[in-house]
Image (cartoon, rainbow, N blue to C red):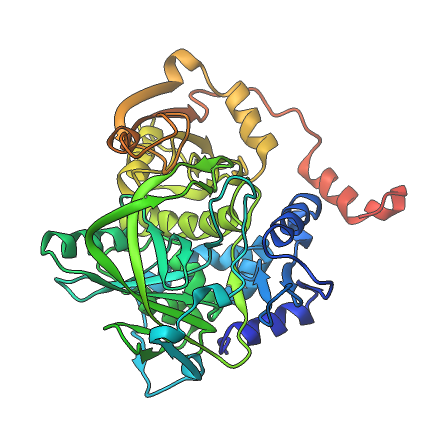
Length: 472
């Protein structure tokens, strides 16, 4: 059965030891960020829990993070499947989506604030990079927009700067669905309706950060992932629909053809994302459940929730494209968290033709142009998730002169600080172009036997490991 809402999923996480409650009072302006960073750095990924800050100084609203991407295990709990089934589950969701259903009302509108009662600063939005971020930021907002031509909804996760009680700055990078919708309205001189959803059934958050086809409703993809249609309610002041069981919704209007300075912000690259001229949102309504929970993402330096979530979802949709759509002999796909689940891509293949490694590279770059600045193709005996395996293949299956090549004029990795000046306000167009390196780390001829004990011997030792005096 799908999770009804964020609260039901948090109860599941707690039941399996994947939710850590912090009852000590914390300061949202520095402490939530610092505690979260230490947790992500010091707790092994496989054991890393979601973190619930129950007592935020000056607020009666708790803050939770990690409920979508504290680890791959948490991600799989959200999808109710094993790690080996994630890619197939995503493929099925795009091939056979379940459209959402409209319902007359839901808990998300138990409390409604309009006009002078609107004050987004009543919500405990954390400050993430103290001394660098200009103000608190919304990091886990599922931003809902609608294509003014087709009517297809987009749900995407973009950063939002809190600029005042009724004003937000909205940064959306190029090649994103929400930006396409706003720019279409801008050309017509019209404002754009927007709804910022916080705290949902977890699969909606996972879809929001992933890449699906532009003509596909993310709510419908989420429906198939959860096995049941998402229930939506109409917003109070904008022409959009939001999940009925969400915790908090901020409704607003993006001003037509008007930009303001926004940022900088600590981004998934591990560096400060530069200040930019970005969209302005005037808040028209805030609704929330009784006793709401504020959901946030930890971004900044990898490892982070941001890079974990993006990596798994992006890998799954790319794998579906390569295998289901193009019928390429791809065995696995991995966007390394070290590269923010964007810059460094490794793909394993069952090679039957010497041209296949480059064919796969170009297929990856065509599907997701901003990913894979460094793209490595390996044989199917290499575990793409094991850095030792990948680096071994790079070391001993590559002749740089023949097996590596660079192409220029490609789409840049979003917010990559290596390819342009830090201030994008006057140089945004230059930051859209970059280059890519492709490395064919497959075997090109018959290699000597691998120098390891026989597999059956290793299997016997693993089975009897404790008899040798070691512990798991």
